[in-house]
Length: 164
Image (cartoon, one colour):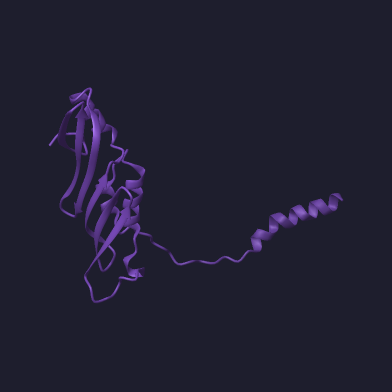
């Protein structure tokens, strides 16, 4: 029994030495739309907004039914119940620009703190988050309606919580 266990141990240690060594070609993976994700990403933005933005960034236009070599720009709509994104892609799948609108989402902590510090006792009735993205200019704006009893107030803030 001892010889059987010893021989199985030796066989288990030496068998990987005879394995075939194969070299595979190098694969380079690049994120085509990393600039878009970096531009629109916000630390504590609502999860459904982040997921839709990731879907836009990962969308493969070349494998879609829309793709044809004759067009230079492709416009694709993405929807969730709380919002939508209209994205324009080039023929290589790079995002050229987006227009995004989300209604009544969970606001980032910076925006909430800014509102409640300036307007204590007011509550948020509605909010709209708009994003415009292109290579040269990115804009994120929160349009908010506050209520305090019968009074209503409209305001706009940027992603850093600054009033516009």
